Image (tube, rainbow, N blue to C red):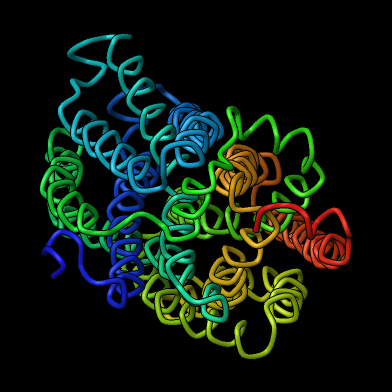
Length: 439
């Protein structure tokens, strides 16, 4: 008779998918509240300057630093996940993220602690980056590897669904505190969403502890096929696959920070729109993303993942132009409609790409392989997209065409990489050497 902590095997796929969704929701909530605070308040609290552009760039600099720590997190926890198990690695990332986020909510500002305040903020942001760097790969694999082979794209998408869910929670949290006057919001109001993470940490921990280890990895352990340094094997034998997977992830990762983090700063500072109104618009867009992603994953399984990804990426190349035309009208409806055009295609890519890239790596190096791919891309495309967007909007004041071209470039890179990875996987599947490697 199965114990409550270890439900029967039949229930594990559902539990694993649910735990992946809830766990990534919590971790992305923590990550997104930092992004929102970086756009709205951190420049004033930790980097006061006479020019708001300078403060915002400094704030986004710490935001980017978290992305630079993500490849290290992917390397460390990918190693642990491929050596001792997916579950143990995931439990650790959840705790690190929760502690770091609560710590940010307790930090003194620049006026109280001087340079120590931004230094501590940077340190805790790096801890956040380390945690989320190890989280994504493990959550995708725990959900996908518990599912039957024909359902893995859809199952893995539940880990992806945590991103819009976390975004929705973060926007709700900040929307509630924007009812405060500006002085209270800057003084203490922004801290509340960070401190709430302590409750979410406890909830996430007890949900995840009830999920058993991935069946695929359990087979690797039983056959003693674990490697001493999995990442070294990935770099030695699959570096082309890593580069292609990075390209596949580019617009999905960079795009979400373009449409949320950068657009929040762009609409409030460049267009001079009301902060509360923009948060309401982004909330509506996040709800649309939440419902688009599972539908996209279902379509990918039904019509073919590579085919759905290709169509979405091609449409994504064209999408930013109507987006900026609509956003420039500066009404709530036009802003939601404009961003939603971009987001539908971006969310489709984000939902389906997890299963697409995880199947490109063998089980015994899969955690390391997908973590390195996703997090290296995150460090570049995610971390620098708000900085590049802010610089372009400052350099070409009043012009949105350079911003749209930048987004099209991200989408084109993804489109080319999808073609390349699909062809690469076909070649590897037909290779005699591939048949001899562990599944």
